[in-house]
Image 1 (cartoon, helix red, strand yellow):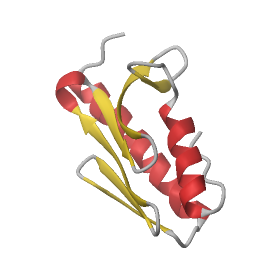
Image 2 (image 1 turned 120 degrees about the vertical axis):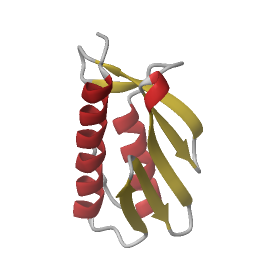
Image 3 (image 1 turned 180 degrees about the horizontal axis):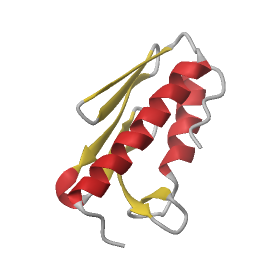
Image 4 (image 1 turned 90 degrees about the vertical axis):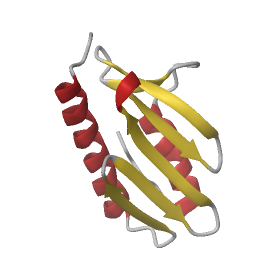
Length: 110
């Protein structure tokens, strides 16, 4: 499935807003999240900074983590998941698990 620029923008905006809401709803004091210009930044006291941002030219989400490093994800329309371009891992699962570890409580991004 080829996404148009507009479809990609809408898809990314929705997922990043949904993830921001989930992080805020978890109410974990060590986590501070903000979403600006298609970049979701989560500062985790004692752990570091997590960043998810859109990469329009490749229509990917790029993820940077103090735990797992940097990786790239493409949208898989059948599963409706963002999959790692190398191993196929689901970004929501990885990001949620790492935020849970950093925040000391559960962050569900699914």
